[in-house]
Amino acid sequence: MGKSFALVIILISFLLLLVLQNLEVVNAVGCTGSFYNENSTYVQNRDDIFSTLPDKVIANGGFYNASLGNSPNRVYALVLCQRGYEQQDCFNCVLSATRGIKKDCPTRMNSYTWDKDVEDNVSCLVRSSIHSTFGNLELEPAVQYPSPDGIDPSKNMTLFEQEWDGMVNRTVEAATGAETSSVLKYHGAIEAEFTEFENVYMLMQCTPDITSQDCNRCLRECVTLFKNQFWGRRGGEVNRPSCFFRWDFYTFHGAFGNVTRLPSPPAQEKGSSATDKKGRSTRSWVTIAIFVVLTFINVFVSIGLIKFFARRRKSNNGINVDSEEHSESDGQHMLRFNLGMILTATNNFSSENKLGQGGFGTVHKGILPNGQEIAVKRLTKGSGQGDTEFKNEVSLLTRLQHRNLVKLLGFCSEGDEEILVYELVHNSSLDHFIFDEERRSLLSWELRFRIIEGIARGLLYLHEDSQLKIIHRDLKASNILLDAEMNPKVADFGTARLFEAEETRAETRRIAGTRHGRDGLKESLRLDTIIIPLPKAPAMSGSQSQSEDGTMSMSNDSTELSCR
Image (cartoon, rainbow, N blue to C red; front, top):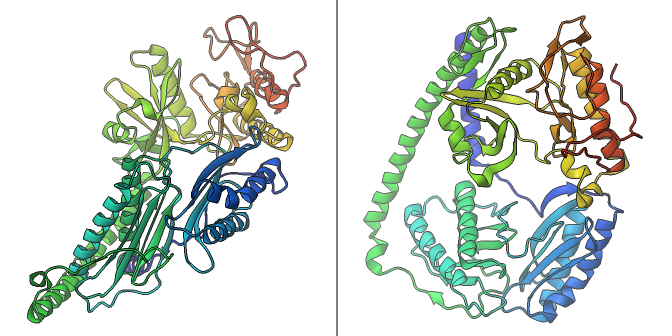
């Protein structure tokens, strides 16, 4: 069984290598952001401003930005034509780009495309978004168009790459060193002769609203993306919202009519025929060596996977694993993070990554080495209450799994640091929407009821359906997080209390949570059903009542939501 499993893993690994060699990620238009209805005010504003762009960009010398409508349906648009354009070509290009966005991004609030006119005489950019991006470097999403054909493998690719990199540097310098007074600055077009290729063409352009340094960074990241994913192709294009990069073996976009052709390298750099043969022979041996090394790597990876799965089977029987922490309450396991990894992920808890702060401490955004985004709760040092809440939240969330509860990925406890690592919930908390006039309008009645229903499902799971019986004791709008699809997730279990299976009421001498209408109440499951109108009532009406100390209190007209 073990040998068969190893052979399967090795076979899969080789297949993955073959797939990765031919990996392509090709998109037509960059679409991001929230969704909207096709008949909404936002899409009407977008279509209206799009209809003005072809004329406006010509009237403003090739670059134009504007906005239309009132928040939250305000649309921001930016349009740019390639330097040296003819007016009719620019008009046709922008018209084609706006039609492409309407077709390919019909229900997304942020979109962009670098397009061309029918005759390929000019390229242009059209960008729309729900927030103003003017003056900001926008790198995502990247749109890629690699050539389907590869370069002849008999060519000296080492020499080609050296000459290609030199051409990249010259084109970047030409684009970023343009006249600062020109509305169409940041434009570089170069034609060059390589040792084994007669003509190579390269075009780069940035939007003129960003700095020269940002333009340089944008173009370099386009080049890096192409080399990482599509090196060896006969040309290609990488677009970003703030810049454009394309190269090929033929002219395109009418960009090279007045370009001075760069000569090939000096004769002594070309090398003799014998040298070329030697180089190709060396490359053949290098290819064989790489293949052998990859084979050994696959074997070692396979052995590692076999050991990994064997250790996992042991861990399921109650045996601890180095990277996991044992839960004393029910034998389950969870990931224990190294403090060094947390510091790297959060950039040493930098202020730029700070998401919020409360009585327990601070929350920072982080990115793990595998690219996963996380939210890191760092408890206040030296707080006895913080220690208790830390152990309580780890103990509870280890055993809770529900789509409407925030997911705890792991924890870190080193020295005086006590840290909880959660999934990152992108849309912040409910109070950021219901108490903000601009964001509140994004909550349709259907969405509000869906949020309320999700909160109720999470509470029902805590009260009745989980292995434990738990009351949250601090349910409020700031403890309801919303994911990218606006699904609610109940968070912050530091003050939660565990009940026995048949217990529905208990006494406590410790005050927990936020004071809002809970005076004189015994702790019971009904505590959460009384608290639920706090997020529910604002979610329905958008109103917030406060006591003298600034904390929320229940509205008199709120409706109780029962989960029993």
